[in-house]
Structures are given as structure tokens and as C-alpha cells.
Length: 106
Image (cartoon, rainbow, N blue to C red; front, side):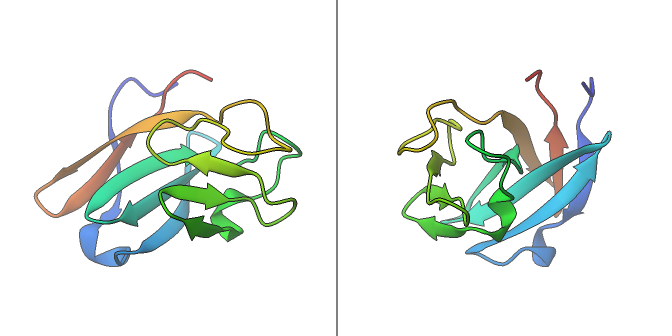
């Protein structure tokens, strides 16, 4: 786990709405910009490991492209089957035009 925030991009690199996957400390993290808010989640569906970054938005959820499981962007909670376990949410901050992520323990 990273102890500090890591710069991942400038705010201009991800439109609103938009998303992009970054590798931080050998971990793939999905960074989302939606409705002027920023979110970061593991880029992995807890049902079968599908890439959430390839999914689409449904309200404030990201939908796994494999089987349609939805995850809440703010909490990481699994909102629909077949996923029953939350994905890890990470801390995000925006400062001076840059987006930073701090990994949380899984």
C-alpha cells in the first residue's frame, strides 16, 4: 500500500464524464471523473476479475462489461448480482490541476 498520494494525471486528461486506468504500485486503478467528482476503484470486478475500466456508467455506478455487475463509484459497494463483494475504493484528491490517488488496503 502506498503511504502517500501519487500523481496520476492532469485534470484535463480525463473528461467529465470519463475514466482511465492507471498502474500504481503494480495495481491497476480505475480513475473516474463524473459530475465534477473524482473517484478511484480497483479496476477489477469482484465477481470474476473483469476490467471495470472497460465498463460503462449507469448513474453513479460502473458496470462490469462481462456480466453486468454494478459497483457504486463513491463506496465501491457491489450494487447488483452477480457481484456480492465490494471492490476497493481509493482516496482521490485534486490539487493545482493534477489528480492524485492514495491506495487503500484491500
